[in-house]
Length: 323
Image (cartoon, rainbow, N blue to C red; front, side, top):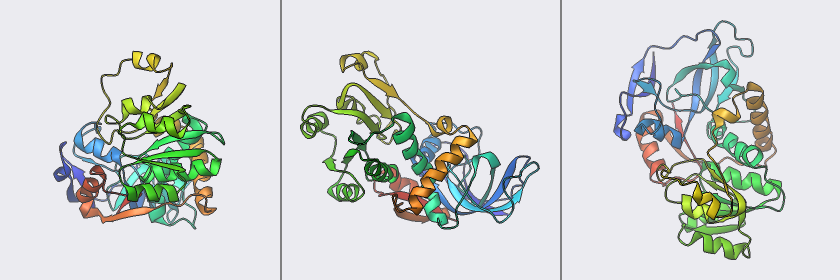
């Protein structure tokens, strides 16, 4: 038997229920993992509220974690019991153990702790996707990053600094601004009021070629207004709510802009891409280029409190659950 957090319906944090369940048995192509640390992400909240639909109810939330292989199903050749592993995008993580398709798991180097892995797999690969795939950021470019003190934001700031780009970080408080600056943001903007005017001043009127926006509804139009002609709007989250009612004419009148809503499951659909991305991420952590900040740690039973803290924007860096 093992403990897990399940939902039986969509709603607030109260729908997250700690339950004791039979230990799962890995099917063909799967492995069973004893989880040492579990990542908490906004996508978990989207699934809890029903913005994103789970395949069926009841369901175990959680997309990210790290641990040790306990058993393997038929046909699995890449892993054996005792291997250290981590994963970024597979529903079912809020538990002491879980089964998962072996091709969605990567080997975890011995010099990366489990908590760091759980705090960086989804966030770190998101940063990789944003900076290297969605828009290949170049040295000397200026980019605008919302939620620059969040789990993804801090890694984007560090990685962009390593590339040689200038980061304008948007945060909600002075404290978060100082943290983002320490992690590579060259300029800090508090709040999104008059955002375009402040970006125009910082860039001497040039504006930016790309905006990375995980906030969503509250910042979408302001983000568009910060782009240079033919700039790219990257909307990759809905922390303030889903962006709806978009008119494509908004892109034309603001300078023939581009808009994308990228997802990790698309960019890392191929196992070769997942392994390569994870290796680059782990190498940069081992080299000290990237530092993963675990701002909040909660017990598995307190998953509701963890999500509440994240949803209220009271968190800094990554949030994890400890089984």
